[in-house]
Image (cartoon, rainbow, N blue to C red):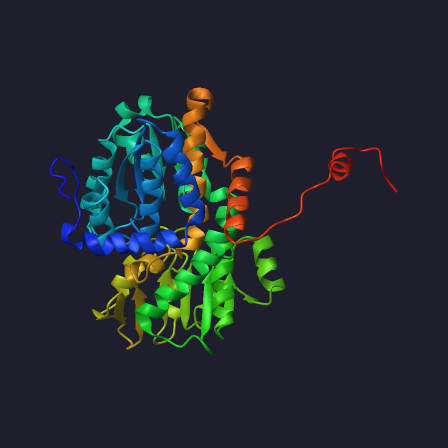
Length: 423
């Protein structure tokens, strides 16, 4: 169905039929967002609300967008990473579902930010972000739009870090719910989703055998835990590097070697960064690495590996496989950077499995509804997902899996709420 009046920028609308099939396939693994979508279609809680969303344009995101649309919202989408867009999905959203999308896989930096501005031209009342590029652009360059914004959500750790910095400085001018902090998000999406999809992306890019390899995981947050667990499950020897003593202790108690990156650099075969910080792998580490070392990033931005230093150190560079760049150093060593240092699970694979994004995006949808219903009752700041929404997502997910759980009896509830009974 042609939509000649719709503003959009995608690679090719002819890709839409394939995108529709893949969106439908993902929906099979997203029963929670499906149930919310059915309710939204009946109740229309987002009627007339304009939403600008800067997210990875994937099959899972498409199902979130359709849920919000069926709830009455007017949704505009742009990409939150230049290499994460699935072009067939972007085409399908425009051509078949009438949702404006501004995203082309492989877009340059200027196009990336032009697309953010095009999504903001929608005049959002709600923002959805993954990494906070849309929110920071809005605050820096489109401040005239802020008065009309009711609130927003943020999907990932890096974005939450940036938004909390804005809040501390008094720069954040509307409330944002940190969806990343929901238990049904970080316990499952970050651990199981990132764990599986990161290994998947590296495997697709390189076709390596993991068994027997020494894998260095930088960062032992929920994402790092997931990657370490999956790498060990495939037979790899795992080293963890950390700056947080509690997480380092946890990694050691979980059975991993723990050491500084300066020591791990000379040992590792594969290096995976998942910290949300800059130059976690820096020039001295690159100088110590052995011939053939593979470098991959699964943090949000391509800053965790010092790519400018790698470029300066190298005398030659060539793309030896899709998503694999070989850097040859003057001493003959070769280092391999995957996916240009961007999110490897999306640069070389399809991102998280739909079944974990089901919970993340259910939190997104319910948080948007929460913000709309409360409207101007929340002061500017970063908020956790309300516990009742988190638990609602968990209960819906359990029900979709055919799992029943116990409920507290009245006696048990009284006991837990009292202080008088002891030994």
